[in-house]
Length: 356
Ligand SMILES: Cc1ncc(COP(=O)(O)O)c(C=O)c1O
Image (cartoon, rainbow, N blue to C red; front, side, top):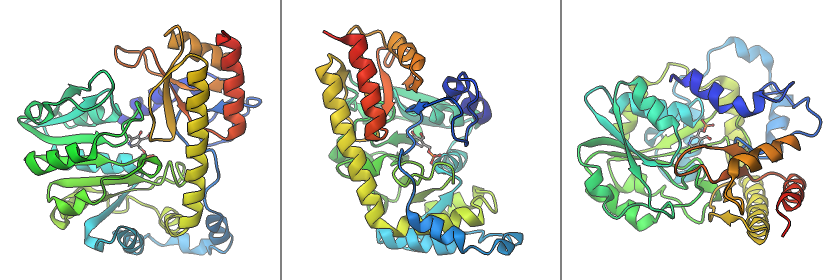
C-alpha cells in the first residue's frame, strides 16, 4: 500500500456517502462527521484577521525554505532553539521524513499494536521491516518492551496512542529512551488533550524526536502543519531529507497566528475535554465498554460487542464514526469528540439502539 492508497482507504467511510467531497462542507443534510479526529470548532479568529489583510501578490514569491520565522515561534513555545525544530506538511510529513532518515531495507522499525497504521505503511515504502509489539489487554505497554526492541532502529510511539486513546506511562517511556539505543519518535498528535506530555524528553535524550500537529487541537487539519523537536544533529539529518519547500507560505503564516493564540487553544481544548468526559460517561451508562481517553476521541465497544453493526446503524442516521475491523479493535468504534450538539445526537441514537 502506498500513502495515496492509504489515504483513500482512510476516507472510504465518508466517500460512501453520496455528495461528500473532502475539504468541502458536506452536502448531505446534517452529516455528523466524527471519523477523522478533526476539531469541531473553527481555528483561532486571528487567522481570519490575518488572511483579510494578506497581500495576495506575495504569493508569486517562494516561501521561506527553512520556515525560520515559524520555527522561532515554535522554539519559543517549547523553550528550545530554532535548530531543534523541523516543520512539515502535516505531522505525516514529519513521520515520512523520519522513516526516510532512519529506516531502509536493512533496518527494522517498531510500533505497538494497535496503533496509527501509517507507521507500518511508511516503513514498507522504505523497504524496511516493521516489528509490531502487541499492547497488553488494557492497551498499556508490555513489561518486556525493551527486550522486544532488540535490533530495532526506530520506534514510532504515539502518546496518547491512536486509535486506543490512552496515554502510556511517562516514566516507562523516559526509561525506555534512556536504555534503547535506537531512535524513539514520540508522536504527540493528541498531546494537547492529555494530562501531560513527553516534550521535555526531546532535549533530555539525544535519540528522541517528539512530533506535534496543528491538525487536531488547533483546528487546522486543512492547512497541513506538523513539527518535530529533537537534538540539533537529528534535526540536521531530517532537514537533508525534506523537500525544499515542504511548507507553503500561507501555512507558515497561519500556523504562526494559531500558535501564538494560547488562550484560544486552551479554551477549545477545555471544551473538547468536557465533552469527552460527558460522552464517555453517557456511553458507559448505556452499557458500553469505554476506554479511558486522553485524546480528542473515545474508543468504545457497544453492549453486545458488535461494533460493525453499531457503525452501520449510526451511518443510517448520517453519523460517521470509525470502525477498525481486526483482532484487537474489532469490538470497538472510535468516536471523535464533536460539538455538544453533535454528541447529543449521537447519544440519542445510541440510547435508542441499546435501551435497557
Ligand atoms: C497518531 C497520529 N499521528 C499523526 C497523524 C497525522 O496528522 P497530520 O498529518 O494531520 O498532522 C494522525 C492523524 O490522524 C494521528 O492519528
